[in-house]
Length: 207
Image 1 (cartoon, rainbow, N blue to C red):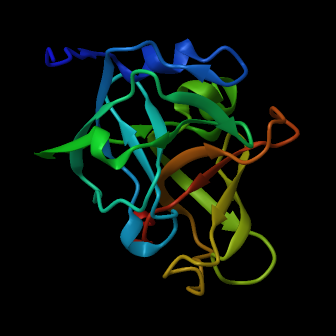
Image 2 (image 1 turned 30 degrees about the vertical axis):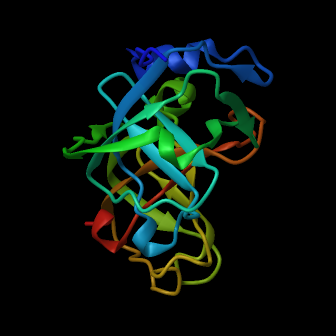
């Protein structure tokens, strides 16, 4: 059999393939990106990984638990795979683990943005790493666990931490911080009614 040839596809181009309902990625396509999620803190389920290149980001859900670590560059064959939304969050779904290969390590520099920047164009920021400066965390309780509110000079956004995260019981600071995290979506509704959120990967994301 001939060895299949895969064409590298920028992540934003992959996102544009999505039609609004379950879509099959064109055959012979692959994507390459740097892992920006951190499975070691259990904030993300171990079947999922969020990767980003210089055009955008996307969540990839593997068919079994994966061990790709934050800062690892991976290449994934996505041709023929399912592109779908889970609570509004775009994902490549149920990808065989054997479709992914590690290329070593790399880094992604988070985009320094305001909350209003995110709300103005949330789909372009979805599954990417951003830094919001001079922001304040508030909400019921004193720990990160669950949904809190992150506010900067421009607007507010939900800051979500899974109760399973290793840092969920940590008390959040009440003074202004610089916060780095991954933009995601948890309902299909659009702003201003909600839908989008940000999540830190570990406590080092809050300075």
